[in-house]
Length: 205
Length: 205
DNA sequence: CACAATTATGAGCAAATACTCAGATCTTGA
DNA sequence: TCAAGATCTGAGTATTTGCTCATAATTGTG
Image 1 (tube, protein in one colour):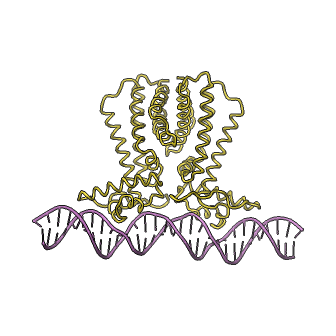
Image 2 (spheres, each protein chain N blue to C red):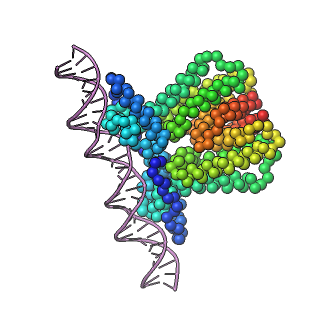
Image 3 (tube, each protein chain N blue to C red):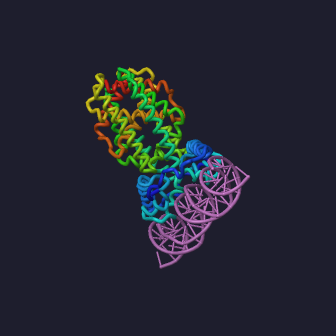
């Protein structure tokens, strides 16, 4: 909408188990409803119905519809960054090819669950400045890490590492996402192999 | 969506010059309004207001809101395929690198006008089965042509041309689109150079 | 000019939907 | 056990918005 931003914070803190359970039911139902109907047609009443609760209960945990979307996206981003952080703490492979393979595999795995939900999340994110900011920060972090990696690796021969890093990140995220979400999805293994080959040959020059 | 599809055909044929003029004003206004507010918040009343006509006039040329979106997308697809067809009739360069450059440049040029409008078009297209089908056909054609190109070119050394073609098309379309639509857009020239380099090194093996 | 066809108008209707609130029901802790 | 707090309920409200239609204005034609 053209008007100002809406709050996104949860309305109350659950104090009983059933409350937390209800919260989870709402989120699960919302994920399904949004994936099936899209954001606009995924009405809050429909979400409540699918969750098996009343519409009033939904609004006890989420101040508005956008907040539900925000929570789902936050979850996904947190999962992704957590997985990436876990990989980064351990020792990375030597060759740039195997390093790329690790991260491409991460991206593939992150998208295999529910490509349609994920597509919807990213498409509808522009509804909130806060979410846009969050996505932007994650992206910038990824580009930054990639750039450092490219600059420090002996096999890498690209001149403009800043541009290269942006290209690599955009390519991995978007192509993986798109090719797995298509009606006739590409084979995940082949995608991984070809994507890794493309990136490796590119940066090796 | 769960409900049925709506018609998309125009309501009437303009018979006077002012009618055609009004039609164009509507489309131009819609492009701006959709780009600024998104599809959902881009109301038909707002479009009419921006076009400087009454809401009734709008509905004399478009049976419903989706039809306006469809017309805008159709225009873009037609422009794109026309540009591609024009290139394909003439003689292509010899080297695979220069061939890629031609098509990457086409993609970049197609996105330079209004990346935000284009993003909105492609995101909202799923509202119509007909549009989805149209987009899918264009995409399949592009993949098909690319595959033929890869199989027939002496410099190309990829084994699985089917997968490679899909990867190439997805990469060009999505990465170009994304990197040009970002708040801090990448330099178009650099993007072209790096993208061409990546694709060339990839298929040369 | 006269008349028909085309185009333009915009108040208002019908439907969809995000969200509220007053009260019912359940859970906890002493 | 029982009161206080937490949670749940769902009919109803307020608003938005796609779209209609009766009427007016404009244009083309003989």
